[in-house]
Length: 580
Image (cartoon, rainbow, N blue to C red; front, side, top):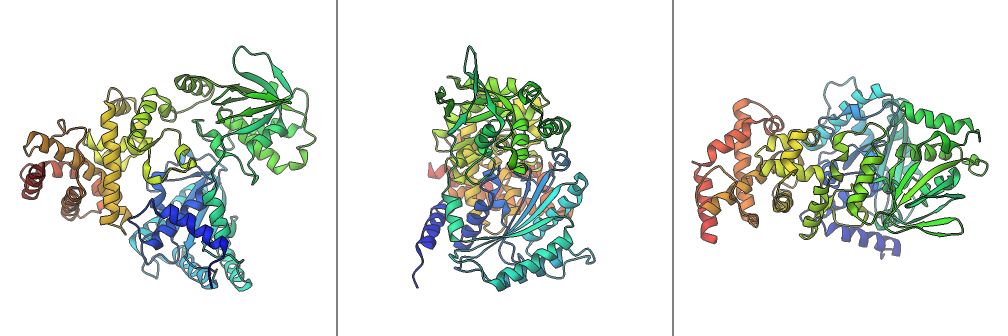
């Protein structure tokens, strides 16, 4: 029986997505596709998408997993920064099963029930089944993360995301099997909301095909005099409608230039909520609040007391906006009766640097970490332009390029580029591996990476990091942990080899590596094999794990010491020189 139109449309979307990951097997492409669809609405770093996968076989029926905190994907579970999680946060664990089938089956729930019983049974010291290393590590990290995060008293939701190409609703017996699983999970995670999301062909098509709009209309009822831009009083209900998409969800992408994440139930937000709950028209809400600042690309067009806005970015007022959204989401009956207003400023700076100064200034009224503001520095705009010329998209505005439909394989984040530079040019791959964002918080290290460095260095680092990642995925397809451990060391040796080729001498230096030196795939594979051997030798000598070895400084020293007198490197250099 031929596929229905809905199934064909969903498969077409999947095939388009899969083109960005040609090295993957089709089953893994589908797992990644469904993982992407599950978190597309959230704020996440595309560099970490592949890390959600749980490996090949021995995954207990869980193909991928995500942790969401306050609508942001929590990428680093190895060393989670719990200080960044406010008390009473909204937390979600999503466990995904993906099958390239055209139906939903009850046995999928049975497999998951067995896995959760095994892994989260506190009476068992060790799981009774054998799981692959990637899956076991991820589940252990999630379990340990929850044990630490529970002290923050989060509102927990568990979602089982079951994705297939089905164009029919699941049968009653399948729903019943998943209801049994849900009851079991409520027993494990007390007070958690648990639900199963059956994601079929129609849902996969709609989610993957959607692109968020940055254009919107904003109604106002009083326009105030202003020497620049627009200043208006906007009814709270109209502002709520402005913030809400067609599905009734918050337009998250409106806030991507706002450098501060939503801070949850801290004092300032409790005060905002308290003011909203008072339901008093005197004094009006806008007298008690700093208001909202919106940046747009063109001057607003006003008709019938409605602004037409292009490329909306809310750069100040995230806390106020979230509180207004949450309040009216819970009290929809008050949308028609509430007559209070919020003050909104709309600016359309003609020069991008002015826009960044506004972001810094409007976010200075409350505490913001230095690291949060780094991406607004002028150097990052220059890097963005240089990388775009080389078909790489710099995620200076987090998720902007993803929301424009750019392939994740062509996107590089601020943190990933920093890791690449600190590895290739500062010879500190262990720092890049172990502390992926800490160096952005320290002025001296940040300056060492970004200030005064030629743009060619950033281009070289980005292009070669992407090449190394591509080769590693081909060379080590089922070992994401090993790939993450080795890639920055391999990138460092690529840079050193470029220097050696340039000076025609086997030395542990990288200063003379040409900016246009791009090692071939064969060279990267040779360096991968050699670096892997060095890492495994050191791990055996110290009786330690590769994780710890790659996060310490000893491996860099070993690689540097072995390099100049190593026969395989001598042969590799010789072949590179002969190929010139």
